[in-house]
Amino acid sequence: NPVAMNDLISLVVDSMSLQLQKKDTELILALDADPDVVIGDELHLSNMIYNLVDNANKYSPENPKITIKTKTLANEICIEVSDEGIGMSKEQTKRIFDQFYRVPTGNLHDVKGFGLGLSYVNDIIKQMNGSVKVISEKDKGTTFVIHLPLN
Ligand code: ATP
Ligand code: MG
Figure 1 (cartoon, rainbow, N blue to C red):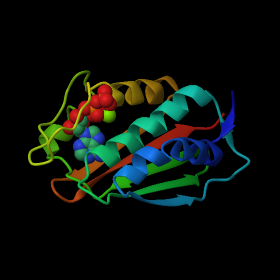
Figure 2 (figure 1 turned 90 degrees about the vertical axis):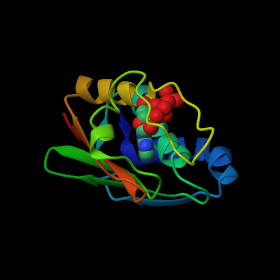
Figure 3 (figure 1 turned 30 degrees about the horizontal axis):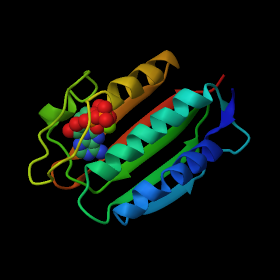
Figure 4 (figure 1 turned 30 degrees about the vertical axis):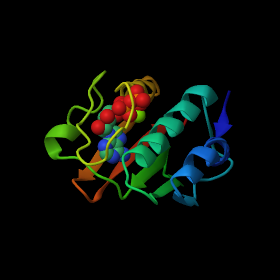
């Protein structure tokens, strides 16, 4: 189903409100993409957003601050999910899209996961002929920048 990205993001973060409240997460939305622009595969795109927000929340200490931005470019939509969490080294960011890869979380204990979320995210983006880039700095935070072509 084609869906407007901004609406989809709002729905997904609403569905996560309990999970986000638990950690007292501050969510900042700057959804500036053209609301008329729709893109395919509602289910996979919802799961993509869920995985990125779940990670931003999990890999941050208490009171995480998560920012989600969208904008429409010439023939694509750009989505950015950023956090101010534990971040990663360059070496680590190279492997996070591999299945089952997980970075030791150091003093942030008990963060559960299988290491599958991002490999799924990467598959979805590839299937849609999009791209994903990670910008991360240890102890500073992480940003995922996604570009998806519009048809
Ligand atoms: P799953 O998503 O399957 O429940 P997971 O979160 O461990 O488990 P991925 O979402 O694939 O797996 O992420 C892989 C690894 O990348 C994580 O274990 C974590 O070490 C690192 N990572 C992902 N997102 C972030 C982030 N926003 N900040 C810091 N590290 C991250
Ligand atoms: Mg994950």
